[in-house]
Image 1 (cartoon, rainbow, N blue to C red):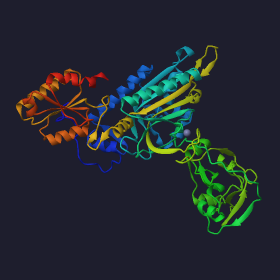
Image 2 (image 1 turned 180 degrees about the vertical axis):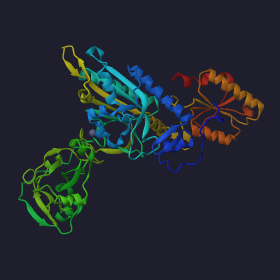
Image 3 (image 1 turned 90 degrees about the horizontal axis):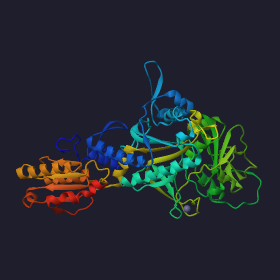
Image 4 (image 1 turned 180 degrees about the horizontal axis):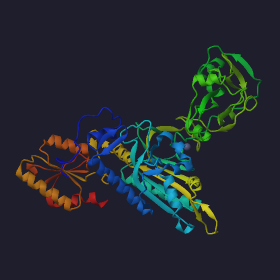
Length: 565
Ligand SMILES: [Zn+2]
């Protein structure tokens, strides 16, 4: 392609709205155009890169036996009602009605539809296993689009669904996907970490995420460098500090004027925070509940939400808290009835705790579970932080920001049972098909590739993803001999099967070289009056500063590495 005719101009300005490197570079190189908040158009350069990413993904999925298909973007709402995910996705669903008033949504994902399709196509165990995938546009009305292509409302995604007859076969499918993912990331020049993940709105059993460490990322990874444990903070566990059990003492009510926070109360009683109990009031799908945790820990709201299986969870307002008869700053589960109490398992480790007295300016001393209060559910709902102990080996956990560039879920029979996707087994019984689902956001992956492959001059494209493999610069293009040599080389490279971006503009060497660095194709070839005279071509790899002078006949050999892939 000739740079003089390509849509999408380079710019030196850093666009004000771009807060991540990838977003800045995509705008500076003219790869994307913002249509609306969280909605982008790909310009030719961006679209070429997207297609390269898709090709890498297709190659790897085809190796493991993936079958590509293409489902509709419009999906009838009735299949979403069958699984209850119409409410789970809530406002994130883009919904619409047709002229006959039938309700549809723009697919945010395709578990419902693929399960429906498989239900009508699979009869017996002989039809399984299946790995079905598509690369298609998805729609999610995200409340907070950000980071350019990192969190958007319309995005291309590779979504793959596995269908198996038994657990053993599901494990095999799952593992083959994990291996394929690793190859895909390696081909894209990315080093990712596979972490245990929460299964969120999708539901299901095992789930992993592939994370890219990134300081501006919105995810947090908790990891142990000793044993390799790693998990998304939403799912991470830790070995909680164990307190020595003391002799149980009688409950005492103590006046604590002006002491409200855990710190103030712990100071007042001269104990450390782990000897206190913190009680929070939450609204879970409009039901007011009490949530109890030891004072040294915080609540992980994702774990709490999952355990309650609710859609909307938030801290209750002071008004709601007071309306329940609680005193803000002195709440505790002691002496409470008629309200659901969820407790973190940390409260079972120690005893003789300090807790609120449900009375203004008072706290209880020597609160003991279960003597002094009741909990409907006790489980792990604590937020894990750097410095907590590894659940596997006990060493100190560390934390790192990152972005998710792929996920894998073992869904089990959640969808196949609700949508009646069953197969006839060898023993003549009908059984629900075991499922897995696997996703990679294409635009986000492209953003991740740029985040990990750039320098202060611009992008450094990995060979497999580069929109063009060769960036050909003709300097002093008004010189007839330069123009002739450059045109000839351009045609020769195309015939050799290379993707070439030909800078045929009448611009200075400085501008051309700066643009070549910004656009970041793997190799830059330069033709100038000087090289023409010497019958040479100047070659420079984007990843190195070294300039090589090559005889025209040797160019093909030098560029072999670009087509070996
Ligand atoms: Zn460990």
